[in-house]
Image (cartoon, rainbow, N blue to C red; front, side, top):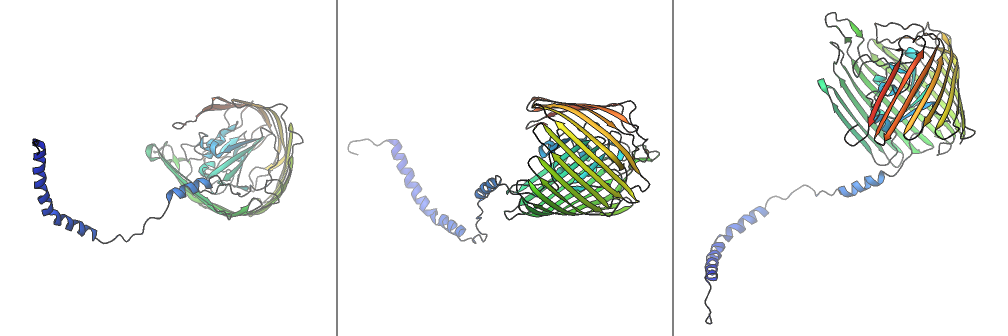
Length: 523
């Protein structure tokens, strides 16, 4: 040790190491054997995962910014005066405090919804005393006709708003014309959506959609909506509906496209029984199925929406249930030309039921940014030698930014219920004038309308009210406003007052108010 004294800790460590080395060597063969045994297990026969999910995610992100042409809207879209049309985009539909199409239509000043109970019960629209003929519906350009248990009035509760990409409402005196446009996906990236809703008493709503477009122009869309609404009032009033929308098309460019579409629904509505003792229903029930199919060909001379256009369409509507079996076939087309400041269009449609001939002509002209005019001429030939023919004229002024003045007139004769062979044409002399001011934070509109005397039809799903009294000529005053003090909050409402005696089926005064909050957590 060269005269140095060994430390006790070092001596203890050397002795411990001398003990552990023989011990480890003694047990090493067992350890090595165990390791060799594990290595000799059967090899994994599954192939290595070669999917690069990061690359696929980045590819989908890139495709989300690539636009592809969509099926053109049928007909010609001409200039129209301000205040004559209300547009609901997909964002507006989702934030429109509405569960059904009828809920959305209540945002139109003067609309009274005949809702017979909770969600899923009938909700036909009565607008300015016109009863069952207050509203016309068009699904992707094709008339969505009343069929089944009520062949006069369409029940908007049977149409799912989850399938709709856009809704446009034409406001005419005595008439609302509702254009419904289904999903139109314009991106290379696929689109999918899933919604799940649950509520009291087993209320349930499930919806989903998947849309895909290929670079070649081939595309498909599939959407489904299931609604189950329990008995919320009375002793029996439940409702359920399973709806499916299927689309397939070939749209290689904005100038050409062909598309097939099928909308199928299976409403099951129990009779509304208010008194369990008597068991007398105050609302009819049915278990039925309805399908609306259409095949459309679109041709355009230019890809920017201007120029000439031709659309050909075949459609089929079928209803089966509730003791009614109906088939309606449609065939026709549109021809039009659109310039920067004017448009001219015509359409012809043949139907195998009630109205074998439907001819329409439209025109729009905006000679300056201040003035816009429009016109529509309608001729319909109904079964039984009856005719509907009327013209709609409109003009609007926008003298300064935000201010609009519009006038509309509808003149002629109309058969209120083509499905009722004894119904004859009634004289139309309807007028409407409105003035509106709209800015980003504030919008106000004051309207006046005068509707001629009219004999409306009631609603078949309310057997306790078999008919509506004839409505005299009436003046209507409406006031609507929207205030948005902050970007995430909006207050809106309207008030409608028929001057003099209110027509049958319309309250003396009617108002609607709503508040919308837009946030990530609450709406």
